[in-house]
Amino acid sequence: MPSVFSPLAKTLLDAFAEGVVVFDTQGKVLYANEHARDLGLDFSQTSRELMPQLAELGGRLKPLKVGTIDLGEAMFLPGTVGPKTLAEREKEAIVRSLDANGWRLAETAKSLGISRTTLWRRLRAYGLHRDGRSKWAQAS
Image 1 (tube, rainbow, N blue to C red):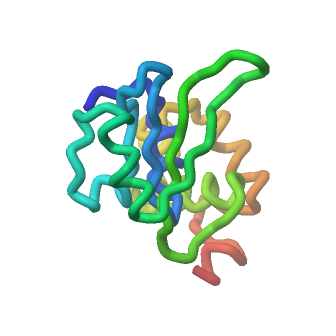
Image 2: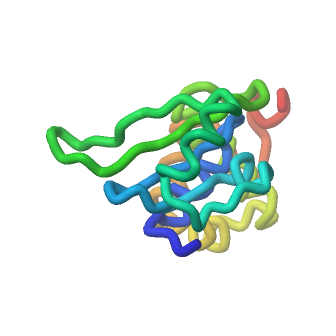
């Protein structure tokens, strides 16, 4: 399934503890995160075909809008307990990517589709250190 989402957006969606399926305005699946893909559903189907199956799994449908512009819909499926806020999810996604890249900033930034400066600012904002030590990283 091709995606219009950046690597960072995909990483954020995959960091959700719940399944997330994003539909465009025509009902085509734009992205399904790891938890949603693990359900084994056929995401080549339209929202009309998938909605009943997702609703049976306890899915909650939310419209996606920027101002008055309709961008589509997202279905959120119950999942495991995890970070709740977008900032917590972003922090978790960044740490996961840093770990996967041996805390090499250039490789991590590239894998997330952001600049090294942006990554550095996020590390500073979240109190994460290049050596991998922080209160948050030690607590996880």
